[in-house]
Image (cartoon, rainbow, N blue to C red; front, top):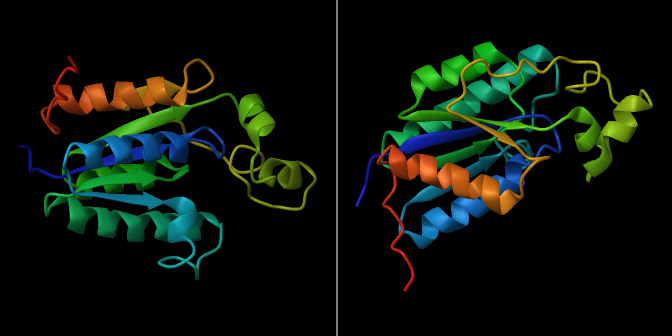
Length: 182
């Protein structure tokens, strides 16, 4: 059994599929007996970072706090799954430097597809000028330069994307290989 922690960091635009894939990966890791914590932007902003807004400084502080939690968990053998837009390369680089076995997963999806999905109605509000500083509309998203994995969610299903993440973790020896079903 692998008991070395890691931080699986999903980054991408709102609506790209980060949380959907993270939940599938989380369920499979639990099924394999791993200790798992999923840190999700929406959930964290209801508690740990509810005092923060969406300015660059607040976004950086949000990721700084999440990185601290991921560092504590991953160094204690927990599989951490972090799903955050985390639009700035420098903040992701700090997370990489501070956590155990950091794996950056770029959940790449054309903004047009994210706008079509827009399950929370945020793009509509941003495009109407009701939300300022929205990533991908009037605030930048700095694409990862060298992610361990790039998943294009407009070209494959969430299950296929999750399978690619799990295969990568198996190849790195971070999770046990799933027994073939007979």
